Length: 211
Ligand code: HEM
Ligand code: HEM
Image (cartoon, rainbow, N blue to C red; front, side):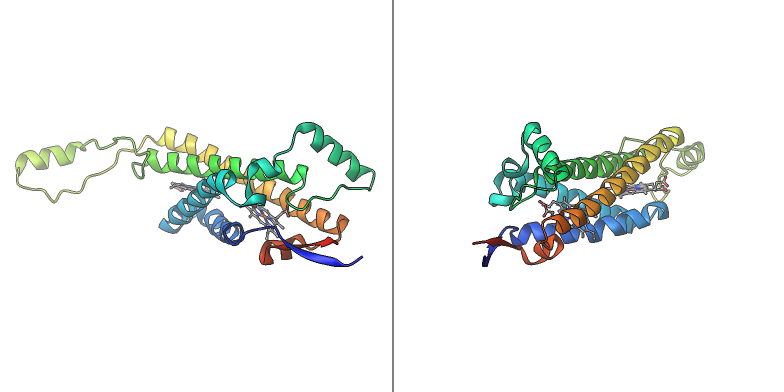
């Protein structure tokens, strides 16, 4: 049987995927640094995920959620076909893979939003709570010299609250890493069973089908 190439992943989905890999890895590795690099790469991940969710509704055929979010019955049937070593073949994401994509996007949102929350409790970013509370030294020096506008403002950080959100943020990011490991295993196993290189397809956008 001859094979023909079919375009599955549009360029934006491919750029999205490999940028997500790059920025997620940098964000994960810089989490402990208290660095601006962590904040910026985290924002990029959040932007990518929000864009991908929108694209899931208005994007190209195989990018749409309606194309790869199957009914639970179909997922069970697919898992059975896997166990029976007669896996059904899908051009886009398979029914199990589809739910993994949803889980990944969801956990990426939780990770980035809890990151924003930590940042907010520290007094920065869009979720910043109004934490400016002039320290006593600042008040007395301001009273002593009313024209002194150069006094640096200090953020009063609720350390217990910061610790609380940091723990949740760290837990979410580790859970996301666990999903990513399962995702990569799933891609590897699926590539073997279907004898197709899924990683290459995420680079070129094309898959091979029997004519
Ligand atoms: C080097 C490691 C990785 C490889 C080799 C890889 C490979 C792939 C492949 C082949 C697909 C398409 C699956 C299919 O054909 O059904 C895919 C989809 C996806 N991967 Fe990865 N992946 C990797 C890392 C990651 C990471 C780190 C994340 C998240 C931070 C991620 C999130 C996703 C998402 C959200 C999709 C869905 C793409 C879409 O429909 O927009 N992947 N990945
Ligand atoms: C996918 C994206 C992200 C990943 C994987 C990630 C991961 C991490 C990790 C592992 C830590 C260390 C936690 C600890 O040791 O207590 C951390 C800390 C932190 N993250 Fe994120 N993060 C992400 C996005 C964000 C975003 C979007 C923001 C805010 C804009 C953010 C703000 C912070 C802050 C403020 C800390 C605490 C740093 C400190 O004071 O030690 N993160 N992150």
